Amino acid sequence: MTRTEEQKDMARAAASRRANSYLRLGATLAIMGLLQIYVGESWGWLWGLAYTLCHLFELWATQPLVTGVHAPVWRRWMAFVAPFATSAAFGALSVPLFASHIRFAPTLGGMLLAGALLNVVVVNAGSRSTTLMAAAPHAFYLLIAPFIAKAANPGANLADVLWFGALLMITSVTVASRTLNTALKAEADAKAEAEQRRYEAEEAVAAKSAFVAMISHELRTPISAILAGAARLHSEVPEASSKIHAQLIADAGGLMRALLNDLLDFSRLEAGRMHVEQAPFNLRQALSDTLRLWRPEIARKGLKLKVKGAASLPRWVAGDVTRLKQVLNNLLSNAIKFTERGEITVVLSAQPTPERVLLSIEVIDTGPGIPDALLARLFTPFDQLHAAVVRQHGGSGLGLAISRELARLMGGDLTAASAPKHSHEGHGARFTLTATLGLAEAPRVEEPDLSITGLRVLVVDDHVVNRRAIELVLQPFGVEATLAESGEEGLELLASEAFDAVLMDVYMPGMDGREATRRLRAGSGPNRNVPVIAVTASATPKDWEACAAAGMNGHVAKPIDPAELFGALAQALAGGAPVATSDGAAA
Image (tube, rainbow, N blue to C red; front, side):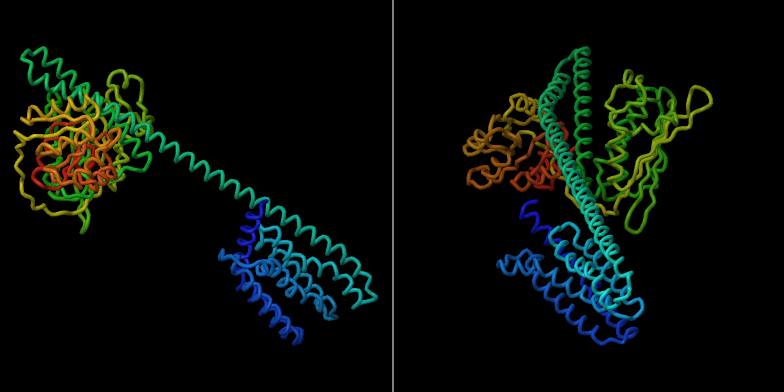
């Protein structure tokens, strides 16, 4: 053991002895009272005074050791020998007890030393030097006990047997001390190993999150190009067959984007970095918009959609509307996917309280249902109930796992149940989503002018595919796009030409988007106050806070969604508050 480690052990032992002061002084006072009452000896008070003074000396001597204050060498030596002095004073009581002719007085002396030794072992555990210093006086008193007993009782041959008892007591205490130190060392090693494993686990999670973030950033570039190109192709080609092909590309790109978003959401949930917002929104309108998006798909499959209880819902509540829609979209998607005929029923209800609203949404289908044996696996990440599901419907097996975690973050839960018939067909599946929402009033906002036709927008991105994809998204809106491939080039253009807005990639080699925005705001050019919209694949509240701190006015995530980009530009140009993107971050 190194000198530093021994000093730390001594400091811990000194702190433990100080914490034990009330017990030790209380026991001393009790012993003095008992000696006065049952023995009638007043010298017990002198012993108690001497022990108290030694104890106070120990408290003074060990103060620098406990507080970590540097002390001179002589003070450190006092701290080292103080436990010896305190134990010597306490154990001195056993000498007159061993020499007493009063019945059971020697027994009381032995019990005092035995208790003192056990206290030393327990209180000073971990510091070998302090244990030895504190135990040495008690061991000495035990070894001289036979001499004192024989001198007080010359004709008592049984006094010689006290040697055996003293040695047995010292040996037992020594073994107990070693056993306790071994147990404490094992506990310390186990804690250190657990701490190391926790650190390694956190490092692994951080590395995985960084890997997922890096891969997502790289994947969003081609996905953006696929979606933008497919949308442009679909709007320009006249042939119906070409439109079908363009739509197929767009659908494939949308599936890729959904899978990527699921992976990112799962990574954030696993790392504990997913948060839900508390913002006012129109609950009825949000649920109505979500259901309206799925009506065409339900009709194309020949199914019916029934909605019950919508009129009982409050209008304005506070919560995360994006995450609520995300979970409902996933439940509706699954219901449509697994229902071949019949209907899908959505049952809405709300239980208001003075401060909260408990929202319940049930999605019930008439599909094959879920066997009870498979319900436990339903919310397991990357798990499909059976291989036929993967072959027929695809998917990553993340949707329900993410949805349940999001529901719990919103103060609720997501559960599933199924009631199969006796035949091969079933009653279908029933998913119940609950969420705790706050009460809110309708915000008073003025609708901004949503026209962005004729704007001059500077697009700053280091990747040519991203620049071209954003340009394709902006062209149908009548926006003139100027392209820059780096933060430095973007600042040069901003210093010489006037723009209505800037779409700034956040992560670029060299000067990144946030640094470019800071320099723009610190300058005095014609675009010092121009709205800057952050464009990035990393879309977390922490990232948006960093973007806002750099002077950016909005935020959209890759792959670029035309509606989100339109809304972010219109909102920023109107001088309004940031709007929400599809992944729950602010924009």
